[in-house]
Image (cartoon, rainbow, N blue to C red; front, side, top):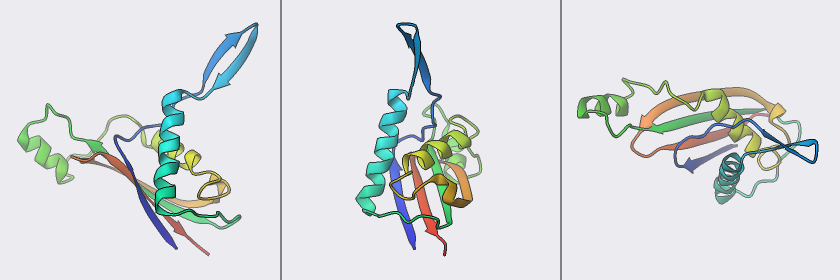
Length: 139
């Protein structure tokens, strides 16, 4: 079974948890931007399929991140970016983009991201920034 969906907007990475101190105790919390983006990922997935996850099924995931072409780029550079002659070597890092997507889909698409046995990630430039994911189920 293949499931394909798209998260509109610039790719985002998982931010580190924040710690605050109140009354002599420390509290860790997830930054609001990360929480909102994770909710956006879940909504994007649920628009396509309202899926009941199964346990212990190995999964493979392909994630493609499309970064915006910088506005200050010349026509020549922009065209090269569109044609994948120039690839993005900028933040967010691939590991942080992967982490936010996999964490957001826990208990939504699968029981736990430990089920993922195969992972492919690519970065490209596009005039329409987004992140596209395909979840391939293996049996």
